[in-house]
Length: 148
Image 1 (cartoon, helix red, strand yellow):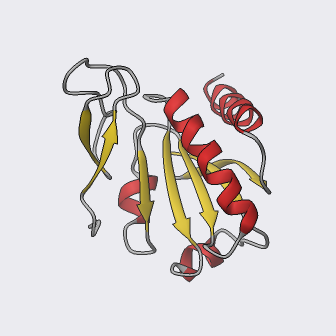
Image 2: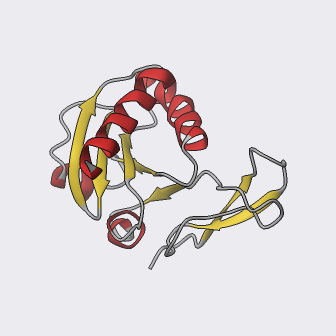
């Protein structure tokens, strides 16, 4: 069970604040305007399965570390992608220094390492920082290829 049950997110459409569960069925929507909300969660070794692998939407996993400059650069770009693709993806962030089992499981050799999971299966992977437009293209291409 996740130690943090919900995050607070501002709706990009109407600006209202919403509580979004870190793990749930379906896709979060604004309680006011009913538009899709960005779904972003920090996870650990202990709650990764519940939060990421059981998600109903494709999950972008950001494996990062606090000391990593490129990781700090890519984080806002990933959050922009999660906002732009609200309702279509979930962004899950994993600090590899605090979660060594996940780092080992996904054989992280460099950071940031980004994965796309579809119902727990890795369907795409890339390492290194990239700007938001390139990340969005990669995510969209990966989730579209999976459906087609």
